Length: 309
Image (cartoon, rainbow, N blue to C red; front, side, top):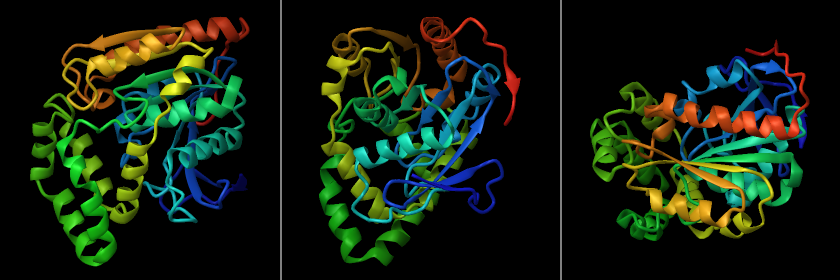
């Protein structure tokens, strides 16, 4: 990891680092310096930090909170090597972010694809991952039950053969008002998710490079960190929504049964966009879990000095 103090353009409060392969990764740290364990947030695929907007401030009132954009996402750069879009590569970026932020140990909080990223990072971070919060996500192949994924190889081939035409179609689809309703129909979200959050999400997706995203989706589907669950020595909190059609409760219950020290919280009416649509319920589950991890690992002095908020 190479420190790069230059912030991405137009992103006040964000910093930039060069990851293991030279890819520019954008990150920021909010909250206060305290002996409570920091939290590192891991987004869903094709997401920036929009789903966390009502989660960050309450957490940052008591501890450091780190956000970052995945390679080829948001404020971060395209992969230096176009083939480096694997979950392992993203997990190594997470390690670089923790190092750049001066964080020796943290609780990793992953949503959707971020669950795979957090678990994969836990594979090699060891004690640096002091706990895991997994929200609406699976340890691997998360979209295997989604019929549209059957067309991924064809879409990838089309994107490679006609990138300009495919890119234009991608942007039109993401900017269409029907995108929101398609997501609703697929069960990816519900009416409880603020429309402005979903609009920001689709606007972000429209600016992504479709060829890179299709490769990342393929890598996501090919990846599994299920084996990591068996050997975890840290506490795990799983938060599921009972209206999540993409990651049903049974999937998260299976994770909890495999991890030695894990608990499951089910949010009534929650869909796959759980952090955006029911942030209060997510915080109500996370807060006591963090207190438990703090009590086990952190000294008694947990005074909080605001630094970066």
